[in-house]
Image 1: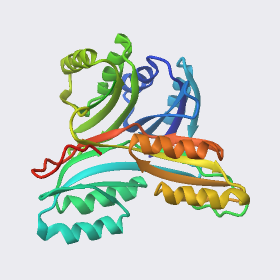
Image 2: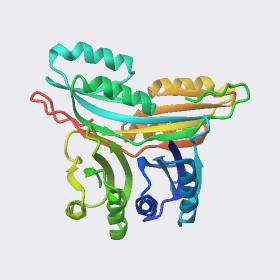
Image 3: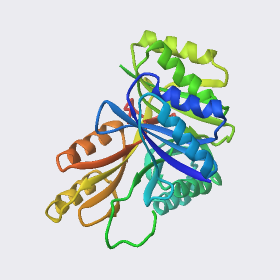
Amino acid sequence: MKHVLSVLVNNSAGVLSHVSGLFTRRGYNIDSLSVGETEDPTKSTITIVVNEEEKMVRQIEMQLYKLMNVLRIEDLTYKESAKRELVLVTVTAPRESRSEILTLIDVFKARIVDMTKDQIMVEMSGTPRAVESFLEAFREIGIEKIARTGTIALALPSCSYCDGNTQ
Amino acid sequence: MKHVLSVLVNNSAGVLSHVSGLFTRRGYNIDSLSVGETEDPTKSTITIVVNEEEKMVRQIEMQLYKLMNVLRIEDLTYKESAKRELVLVTVTAPRESRSEILTLIDVFKARIVDMTKDQIMVEMSGTPRAVESFLEAFREIGIEKIARTGTIALALPSCSYCDGNTQ
């Protein structure tokens, strides 16, 4: 099962290689990893999507806490949280495919970054599932190049009148 | 100066910790790092923004090429390329601030993910500069939580009639 861990770390040289090294040495399966700044310039968040059993994930948490400069770990898997990814793709776009491509861009609320005679570059963000669907649709047309972030996640604000849906 | 390196690697255990370990050992200054899937499930792209002199960046390239499983390095700094980031923020949003917040969301073409009595969660993607401006605007209102990807980048399609502008 996929677990999303949000790991707050000090911005110290080596913290990323220590964290990723832990996953390597133990043979844990990282699906995606993203390092981003926080509001405090001395700290970063590493968001890791790991495909392991519950028991393993608890072990990983324990081992991460033993690393220097790991400050806090939040497992967002069972929390109501928003998960998002971003992708840039260049697609084959001869004139006869353009109208189909523009429709898809509209459907997925994506944005055109650049367009030449034969290619269109598109930017799209959304849930990991929406990004996968977007890519699946464009694969049929022809993806030339792709750049994709890992998943980021944030717990939804608590809310007294909300039901249990997760976005 | 900030350089954007797009590093294509085999999806092998340890490649990320080897790459990030190289930066640590040599004391190079990583501004951001993002690991994302490619269209080939056996390969990933690591996008690294590094703040170093030209000479240093050439050394880093040479050293990266010596690592197992590093297949190709593209320095997108001087190429016409699109650079994008994604951020999720939760902002303080009492009723009296809501209209200002909604205006900002409109200006930055951001999207509301969730809204409770006191908080709004917003998703925004754009150039690193646009993301910074967006955060600056919301800092005045009050950012409670933030999750941010590193920068991803893709070379713009070549185009016989384009001028030299970079997005």
